[in-house]
Amino acid sequence: MTQATGRTVLLPTSQRQRRGVLGPVVGLVVLGICGLIVLGLLAGRVGPGGVVVGALCALLPVGPVVAAFLWVDRWEPEPPRLLLLAFLWGACFAALSAILINSSATIYVDAVLGGGSGDVVGTVVVAPIVEEAVKGAFLVGLLIFRRREFDGIVDGIVYAGLVAAGFAFTENILYFGRAVAEDAAGDGGGVFAVLVLRGVLSPFAHPLFTAMIGIGAGIAARRRNRGVKVAAVLGGYLLAVALHALWNGSATLGGGTAFFGVYAFVMVPLFVGMIAVIFWQRRREQRIVAAQLPGFAQAGWIAPSEVTLLSSLAGRRGWKSAVRRRSGKEVAKAVTAYQAAVTELAFLRDRMARGTVGQSTGTFWHEQAVAELFRARMHAVGHPEALTVALRHQGPPGGQQGWTPPPPGPVAAPMPPDQPPQSWPLPHR
Image (tube, rainbow, N blue to C red):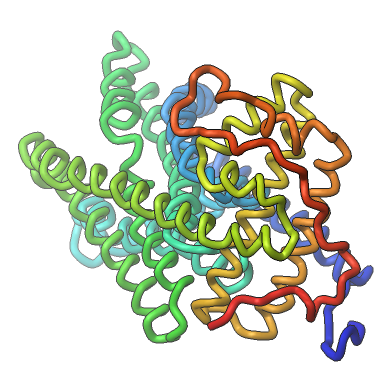
C-alpha cells in the first residue's frame, strides 16, 4: 500500500502477484482432478469405447451453444480465462458433484421407499435441486469474489450458459455412451435418437435452466440492498429448479405427449423470451456506453471523433474491419483491446453513479480502469493506423449497415497516466 494524493492506494506486490498466479493454477489442477474422476466414473458405466464415442458426439452440440453465448458477450467481452473456468466448472466440478450426490440419493431413496423409486425421485426431485445448486455456485462465487467482472444480466446469462454448457457436455457423454453400449449389436438407431433429442431438440435445455440463476445474479449485481440481492439469486435458483424438474418429469413420468407438450408450450416460449431479454439488455448496455462517451471525450480519455465509432457494435465492427484490411490482425487486436477498455470504464462509471459499488472500492477500480484505458490507447497509438484509418474510411467494409464514420479529425492525446487520480472526474451519485 502507498499514500498517494491523500488516499490509500493499493499497489501490486510480489505476494499479491504470486496469489494471482497461484490461485488460477490451483483451481485448474482441482478441476483437472475432478475431470479425471468424472472420466473414470463414466468409463465404469459405459466403458472406454462408450466414453470416446460419447465425447465425440457430445462435441457436436456444445460448439454452437458456446458460440451463441460468446456472440451474446460482445459489448463487454468477459475475461477468456473466466469463461474457460466457467465451462470447466460445469464440465468437471459440477458434473462430479451431481454424479456423487445424485447416485447417493438414489440409493438412499431405494432403500427407504423400495426398488425403482430412487430413479424417479432422483431424476425429478434430487437432480434439479443438486445440479442447479452446483452450477449456480459458480455465479454466486463471481458475485462475491469477482464482482468487478459482473455488470448485469447479460454477464449473468453468459456465465450461466457456459457453466451449463460444460455440464451438459459431460452429461451428454454419459447419455451417448450409454446409447452406444446398449446399441452395440444394433444399427445405431439408439445413438441417432439421443443425438436428435439432446443435440438438435434440446441443446439449450441446461443453459436455459441455469440462465434463470444468471438473471437473478445479474439483477443482484445492480442492486444496493443486500436483501434484494439474496432474493434475486434465490428466486432465480428456485425458478431454475422448477423448470428443470418440469423438464425431467415430463420425460420420465408423462410419456411422449407430456414431453412434447412441455417442449412446445413451455420451453420454446421461454427460449424466445430469453432471446428477447438478451436483445433488450444489449440495447441497455449500448445506451450506457453511449451516455458515457461524451464525458470521456471531454476528459481527454478518447478523441471526440471516436464517440460515434464507439457508440454502436456496427461502428466498432467497421472500425476493426477497416484497420484489419489496412494494417493487419495485430493492429486490429490493439483496437479491440482499446474498445473493451472504454466499455469496461463506461460500465463501471454507471455502477458507481447508481451506488452499487462502494465509494472506496469504486474509486480504486476507477483508477485501475482509467489506467488500463491509457495503456490500451497508448498501445494502439503505437500503430498510428489503428486510430486514424477508420476515420478516413468512407464506409463499412462489405456493405455493413448502420455504420457511419465521423468526419476526419485529430486523435486527441489522452490525459497522461501519471495525472493525479483525484483530478480524474468521478461519476456523481
